[in-house]
Image (cartoon, rainbow, N blue to C red; front, top):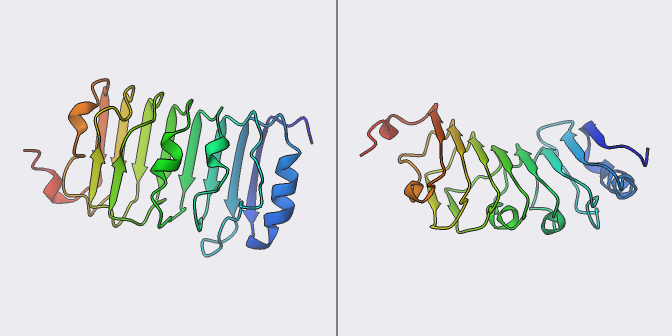
Length: 189
Protein backbone atom coordinates (compact mmCIF):
# COMPACT_ATOMS: atom_id res chain seq x y z
CA UNK A 1 0.00 0.00 0.00
CA UNK A 2 2.94 2.38 0.28
CA UNK A 3 2.71 3.05 -3.49
CA UNK A 4 -0.91 4.31 -3.36
CA UNK A 5 -1.60 7.64 -5.05
CA UNK A 6 -5.34 7.94 -4.20
CA UNK A 7 -7.28 6.65 -1.23
CA UNK A 8 -10.68 7.13 0.34
CA UNK A 9 -11.77 5.61 3.62
CA UNK A 10 -15.43 5.55 4.59
CA UNK A 11 -17.19 4.59 7.82
CA UNK A 12 -14.42 5.77 10.13
CA UNK A 13 -15.09 5.77 13.86
CA UNK A 14 -13.53 7.95 16.53
CA UNK A 15 -11.71 4.90 17.89
CA UNK A 16 -9.88 4.48 14.55
CA UNK A 17 -7.73 7.61 15.02
CA UNK A 18 -4.37 6.08 15.97
CA UNK A 19 -4.51 3.19 13.48
CA UNK A 20 -5.67 5.55 10.73
CA UNK A 21 -2.99 8.15 11.40
CA UNK A 22 -0.15 5.63 11.65
CA UNK A 23 -1.26 4.13 8.32
CA UNK A 24 -1.40 7.55 6.65
CA UNK A 25 2.17 8.26 7.80
CA UNK A 26 3.35 5.35 5.61
CA UNK A 27 1.67 6.72 2.47
CA UNK A 28 4.53 8.89 1.25
CA UNK A 29 3.29 9.02 -2.38
CA UNK A 30 -0.41 9.62 -1.75
CA UNK A 31 -1.77 12.62 -3.66
CA UNK A 32 -5.51 12.35 -2.99
CA UNK A 33 -7.00 11.45 0.40
CA UNK A 34 -10.64 11.41 1.49
CA UNK A 35 -11.69 10.49 5.01
CA UNK A 36 -15.33 10.08 6.03
CA UNK A 37 -16.88 9.27 9.40
CA UNK A 38 -19.39 6.49 9.86
CA UNK A 39 -21.87 8.52 11.86
CA UNK A 40 -22.71 12.24 11.81
CA UNK A 41 -22.47 12.30 15.61
CA UNK A 42 -18.88 11.01 15.58
CA UNK A 43 -15.86 13.27 15.34
CA UNK A 44 -13.33 12.71 12.59
CA UNK A 45 -10.16 12.37 14.63
CA UNK A 46 -6.92 13.07 12.80
CA UNK A 47 -4.88 14.89 15.45
CA UNK A 48 -2.63 11.86 15.98
CA UNK A 49 -1.19 12.44 12.50
CA UNK A 50 2.21 14.00 13.15
CA UNK A 51 2.69 15.31 9.62
CA UNK A 52 0.60 14.84 6.49
CA UNK A 53 1.95 12.99 3.45
CA UNK A 54 4.39 15.33 1.66
CA UNK A 55 2.89 14.85 -1.84
CA UNK A 56 -0.74 15.39 -0.78
CA UNK A 57 -2.56 17.57 -3.33
CA UNK A 58 -6.25 16.87 -2.66
CA UNK A 59 -7.79 16.41 0.78
CA UNK A 60 -11.40 15.82 1.73
CA UNK A 61 -12.43 15.55 5.37
CA UNK A 62 -16.06 14.51 5.85
CA UNK A 63 -17.24 14.71 9.46
CA UNK A 64 -17.20 16.81 12.60
CA UNK A 65 -13.85 18.21 13.68
CA UNK A 66 -13.14 19.47 17.19
CA UNK A 67 -10.52 21.85 15.80
CA UNK A 68 -8.55 22.49 12.65
CA UNK A 69 -5.84 19.79 12.53
CA UNK A 70 -2.47 21.09 13.77
CA UNK A 71 -0.75 19.83 10.61
CA UNK A 72 -2.81 21.95 8.18
CA UNK A 73 0.01 24.48 7.83
CA UNK A 74 2.22 21.64 6.49
CA UNK A 75 0.01 21.05 3.44
CA UNK A 76 2.33 22.99 1.14
CA UNK A 77 1.41 21.03 -2.03
CA UNK A 78 -2.35 21.00 -1.45
CA UNK A 79 -4.34 22.27 -4.46
CA UNK A 80 -7.86 21.22 -3.40
CA UNK A 81 -9.48 21.10 0.03
CA UNK A 82 -12.94 20.00 1.08
CA UNK A 83 -14.24 20.29 4.63
CA UNK A 84 -17.71 18.77 4.78
CA UNK A 85 -19.80 18.66 7.93
CA UNK A 86 -16.87 19.80 10.09
CA UNK A 87 -19.06 22.18 12.11
CA UNK A 88 -16.00 23.91 13.53
CA UNK A 89 -16.47 26.54 16.20
CA UNK A 90 -13.09 28.01 15.26
CA UNK A 91 -12.89 29.90 11.96
CA UNK A 92 -10.88 27.63 9.61
CA UNK A 93 -9.91 30.43 7.20
CA UNK A 94 -6.68 31.59 8.90
CA UNK A 95 -5.37 28.02 8.75
CA UNK A 96 -6.36 27.53 5.12
CA UNK A 97 -5.46 30.97 3.74
CA UNK A 98 -1.72 30.38 4.16
CA UNK A 99 -1.58 27.27 1.96
CA UNK A 100 0.46 28.47 -1.03
CA UNK A 101 -0.90 26.23 -3.81
CA UNK A 102 -4.57 25.99 -2.91
CA UNK A 103 -6.70 26.50 -6.03
CA UNK A 104 -10.08 25.14 -4.90
CA UNK A 105 -11.81 25.17 -1.52
CA UNK A 106 -15.17 23.59 -0.76
CA UNK A 107 -16.64 24.27 2.67
CA UNK A 108 -19.98 22.60 3.40
CA UNK A 109 -21.44 23.05 6.88
CA UNK A 110 -17.90 23.41 8.11
CA UNK A 111 -18.21 26.41 10.45
CA UNK A 112 -20.89 27.30 13.00
CA UNK A 113 -19.87 30.93 13.54
CA UNK A 114 -21.71 34.04 12.38
CA UNK A 115 -18.96 35.65 10.28
CA UNK A 116 -16.31 34.51 7.84
CA UNK A 117 -13.48 36.98 7.46
CA UNK A 118 -11.04 36.72 4.56
CA UNK A 119 -8.16 38.83 5.91
CA UNK A 120 -5.71 37.91 3.18
CA UNK A 121 -3.96 34.95 1.65
CA UNK A 122 -5.42 32.41 -0.75
CA UNK A 123 -2.84 33.57 -3.31
CA UNK A 124 -3.70 30.94 -5.97
CA UNK A 125 -7.35 30.29 -5.13
CA UNK A 126 -9.52 30.12 -8.25
CA UNK A 127 -12.73 28.51 -6.90
CA UNK A 128 -14.52 28.89 -3.56
CA UNK A 129 -17.69 27.04 -2.60
CA UNK A 130 -19.49 27.96 0.64
CA UNK A 131 -22.54 25.75 1.25
CA UNK A 132 -24.86 25.23 4.23
CA UNK A 133 -23.66 27.67 6.85
CA UNK A 134 -26.86 27.98 8.92
CA UNK A 135 -25.63 30.69 11.32
CA UNK A 136 -23.54 32.69 8.84
CA UNK A 137 -24.67 36.32 8.88
CA UNK A 138 -21.75 38.01 7.15
CA UNK A 139 -18.79 37.50 4.87
CA UNK A 140 -16.01 40.09 4.88
CA UNK A 141 -13.31 40.16 2.21
CA UNK A 142 -10.30 42.38 2.79
CA UNK A 143 -8.41 43.96 -0.09
CA UNK A 144 -5.68 41.57 -1.26
CA UNK A 145 -7.46 38.39 -0.21
CA UNK A 146 -8.11 35.84 -2.97
CA UNK A 147 -6.53 37.94 -5.75
CA UNK A 148 -7.06 35.27 -8.45
CA UNK A 149 -10.54 34.02 -7.51
CA UNK A 150 -12.68 33.35 -10.57
CA UNK A 151 -15.66 31.39 -9.19
CA UNK A 152 -17.59 31.97 -5.98
CA UNK A 153 -20.68 29.95 -5.11
CA UNK A 154 -22.63 30.60 -1.92
CA UNK A 155 -25.54 28.23 -1.28
CA UNK A 156 -27.97 27.60 1.58
CA UNK A 157 -26.63 30.31 3.88
CA UNK A 158 -30.08 31.44 4.99
CA UNK A 159 -28.94 33.84 7.73
CA UNK A 160 -26.75 35.75 5.26
CA UNK A 161 -28.53 39.02 4.54
CA UNK A 162 -26.05 40.81 2.28
CA UNK A 163 -23.59 40.03 -0.47
CA UNK A 164 -20.05 39.66 0.84
CA UNK A 165 -18.60 42.94 2.06
CA UNK A 166 -15.52 43.69 -0.04
CA UNK A 167 -16.71 41.74 -3.09
CA UNK A 168 -15.45 44.67 -5.19
CA UNK A 169 -11.88 43.66 -4.33
CA UNK A 170 -12.27 40.40 -6.25
CA UNK A 171 -11.31 41.92 -9.59
CA UNK A 172 -10.76 38.56 -11.34
CA UNK A 173 -14.15 37.16 -10.29
CA UNK A 174 -15.95 35.86 -13.39
CA UNK A 175 -18.79 33.79 -11.93
CA UNK A 176 -20.74 34.28 -8.71
CA UNK A 177 -23.69 32.13 -7.73
CA UNK A 178 -26.00 32.92 -4.83
CA UNK A 179 -28.50 30.11 -4.44
CA UNK A 180 -31.04 29.16 -1.76
CA UNK A 181 -30.69 32.38 0.20
CA UNK A 182 -32.68 34.72 2.40
CA UNK A 183 -35.17 36.98 0.66
CA UNK A 184 -33.29 40.00 2.06
CA UNK A 185 -30.43 39.19 -0.32
CA UNK A 186 -32.62 39.93 -3.34
CA UNK A 187 -32.19 43.67 -2.81
CA UNK A 188 -28.56 44.09 -3.92
CA UNK A 189 -28.31 47.85 -3.34
